Length: 303
Image 1 (cartoon, rainbow, N blue to C red):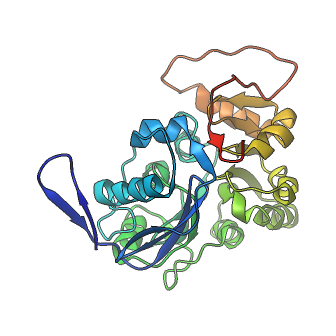
Image 2 (cartoon, one colour):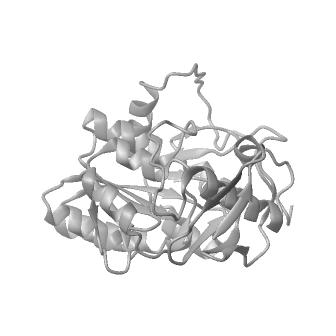
């Protein structure tokens, strides 16, 4: 039982189902019914996005545990009665973009990861956003019946309901076998090698797969060659990706947490998303990327 005290006098209790492991701010976090534990110190010491979402300037193991606990309390993360709120949470998130791409017919299926379900296939954009709105990198998860039932009720397909397996390559193959031809898939940075398997399948099957690389705070130099094969890359808090991937981008959106389009297909779809983006935007030509503003963006403990 994760027990937290709200701003008011009422105590709020949410029961976690099963065992789950995630990355948050580069910290390896374990979530059990008994509580939330940061197994490693976060790599990030401060992050403007984390401050906006959770109200804390300094990031340490305690603030990571508190932010994950708050997500359990407020939204049922890793719980039977999980919230699937389809409202956009960030400007240039993978789920926000995939939602629009599905609704506008640019893709016909998204392959994503949901705690309590594992790899999920769906053509329902609102389900994609409901899953990904407040998600961070899922390392492994356990089946949660309520979550699986909600996914299926919304037209989603769970790759493996028995163990909630996370396998994005198998998810893409399953989507193709179900008749989907234009697929977008999210790949976390710590699983970047899976991009090779997807590209190999894409060639052999003549499928059209857009790879969106996400949750990249912990990527290593060895991962860069795999991430470079994605169509769209969220840099997260990674200085490596800003240095190694940013210069190869055809388009960048965002400065605090930049997102890079590396292929023409990726650029076209990011621009399609921007065409329906409701906030005001500024665009300008440049001869060099990434575009950075001093003092913006996350700060790593090593910097």
